[in-house]
Image (spheres, rainbow, N blue to C red):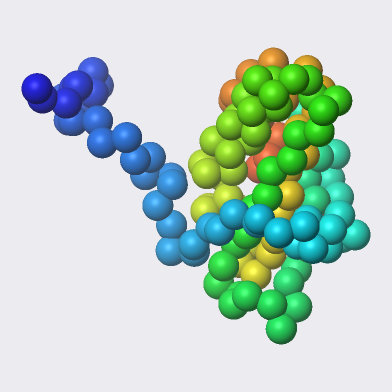
Amino acid sequence: MTPPEDPEDGTAITGISPLAVSSCPVETLRIRPDFLAAARARRQSMPAFLLQARKRGPSEPPAPLIRIGFTASKKVGNAVARNRAKRRLRAIAQEILPTNGTPGWDYVLIARARETAQRPYADLLRDLTHALSKTHR
C-alpha cells in the first residue's frame, strides 16, 4: 500500500510538520517543582489558556533547551475533556514553540474550561504567538 498523496503538490505525506523540526530541542516538564517554579514567574492570560513562563537559572538544564508543560484541572471537565484540551495545547505548542519560543525558558500552558476545546485552532495559534511575544517584551 502506498502512502496518501498530498493534493496540492503530489508529494507523499510524511506526517511530520516542517514547523515541528527545529534546531532548539523542546522537552516536556514532568516533575511538580518545575510546574511550581513556573507558577511563581510571568503569566500571560489568553481567552483559551493561561501561559506561565520563566527563565531557568544557571544551575538548571542547559540553556539551548525549551521546556513545556501542560495542565488541565477538573474544572475543564471529565477525563475526556481534559485530555482533549491538553491534546490541543500540545499541538499548538509543537507548531509555535520551536520558532517563537526562547531557549533557556520553561513554559506551562493551562487549559480553560470550555474555551480550550471549543476555540478555533487558528485562533489558538495566534493566541500562543501573541502570548509569547508579550511575555518576552
